[in-house]
Length: 313
Ligand code: PEP
Ligand code: MG
Image (tube, rainbow, N blue to C red; front, side, top):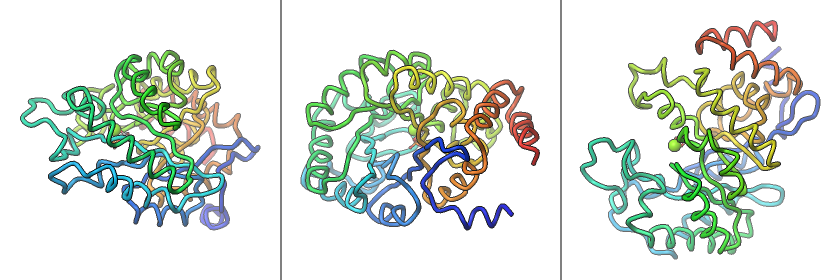
């Protein structure tokens, strides 16, 4: 029966009782964007721009960046939008022309938005490239920064993005941003929760360490509480709060996230059908109940089991 539901579901994302949830794709380049648009998505929730530059020794020119970004924007049109993330270089994604060498603890070092402190031109050039690509393609383009810890950083970034006429947001990947989400929302247009890093930093557990997988599980109740705080702040502010980490690709957890108030879910394109089909089987009230159950659980396995039991499956 579930297989039939999966085959039948063709988008857009909506709960059984009609609450819309934007289902979006995570992409890395033009090729993955052209594949993603074939899925029932309403756009891209995370374009990881740093993945375009993993093999580059020198910073590409603004024109070259514009060409690369335009390839990702191009497939998306009417009623769709693309969230471009500025360079998240450093830590697990070293980029030759941006990353600081020799840090003892790169996950806690100068990575993501922090790289722009010592090299503001890097950010200016990238934003110019994104703006040029947005103008050329006409695709609705939102821009967000990774690894944002303070409201001041968010507000400075938003000013730079809005100066170019684009929507500005930040990722919630550091617990400080989740805890103060309501204040961040005073200075940005949207938030996007990166559960991979948010989990790593909330649990003090390296996301690459397989020995720590039980800690880096996004079902961890402490992580879910940070997500719930952020989603609630979004509801109060009437602004969009998405999830773009791995958590969004887990159909059961995705329903819990929607129950917390998350308005969009962005994931690997291949996961969209599974999430959309599951979401179509539950009401928004059930999503809220699932969220309460997951938040109250003692650990990830208990949370998942209790949510499944609640659904009677
Ligand atoms: C995340 O941290 O959850 C995220 C989406 O960003 P990345 O996986 O690229 O760090
Ligand atoms: Mg991240």
